[in-house]
Image 1 (spheres, rainbow, N blue to C red):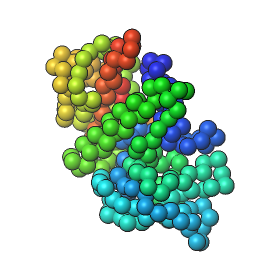
Image 2 (tube, rainbow, N blue to C red; image 1 turned 45 degrees about the horizontal axis):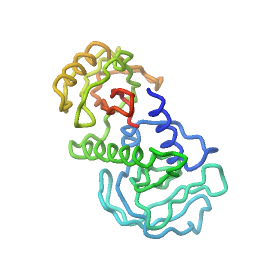
Image 3 (cartoon, helix red, strand yellow; image 1 turned 90 degrees about the vertical axis):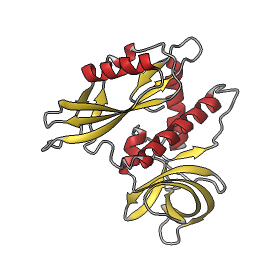
Image 4 (cartoon, rainbow, N blue to C red; image 1 turned 45 degrees about the vertical axis):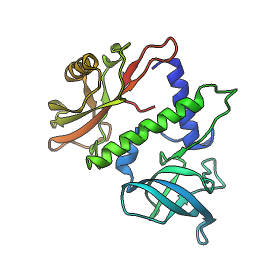
Amino acid sequence: MTRPKLIIVLILLLASAKTFACSCAPSLLTDNFQRSQFVAKAKILKVTPDPTNENYHDAEIELLTLYKGERLKKIKIHSVMNTSCAFLPSEKSTWIIFASVWEGKLSFGACSGSLELGRTFDAVAYPNANKNYSRSIELKQQVIAYLQKHNILNPNPFGFHVYNEQLKLLKGYKNKNRFAVFQLEVNKDLSITDLKLLQGFQNRALNKAVVSNVKENLKLRNTSGKPVLKPVRMVVFCYFYEQEDTHQSFLSFFDI
């Protein structure tokens, strides 16, 4: 990963966690989508303290786009205001909300992966941050919309870690669309028995190179510690990042 892109990742992580002291494990967008019972683009209309639990706030929301779950007008915010992970979205702000059940409550908080739309950064301290953050939000909305459209609720049901050391060699291509999608059939020993391209890149040369590279070099690691008792089907996103200044375009399995 190039240095500018690494800086962007750090900025986005801080934007999500809202604080330097709160430690949230980095996770892929597809993982956040999979573990959430409710995913939506929504405007926060009103925020009030939970009358029975000081760790929560109640939010009235205007649902703009529902990606996963049931339509809601209210949701809990895991605000934990007296901790380093204090998190309280402001009224009138718009978010991509990832909410899951925690302590018996459907809620979202500092580490849920939720994303504030229209968030701005100090243009003097971080000259490219606003543009990069906007592009990152745009990409994430495209991915979420793809998952919804194709009814892919559990893209990686076993939580396999995907890696490919040779993917970094594919640099310098020009391309218009921002991600390709692969469907994998995975055996119990984590060998890939079948690979299908669900969505390719616009650049045919890039697309051909990526498919060949993924077929030959993609590896999976089981980080859950649970035995794989039967074959598994999973979906993998491969992202294209265009040239930035003197840094060549590159590919990654990480959404940034």
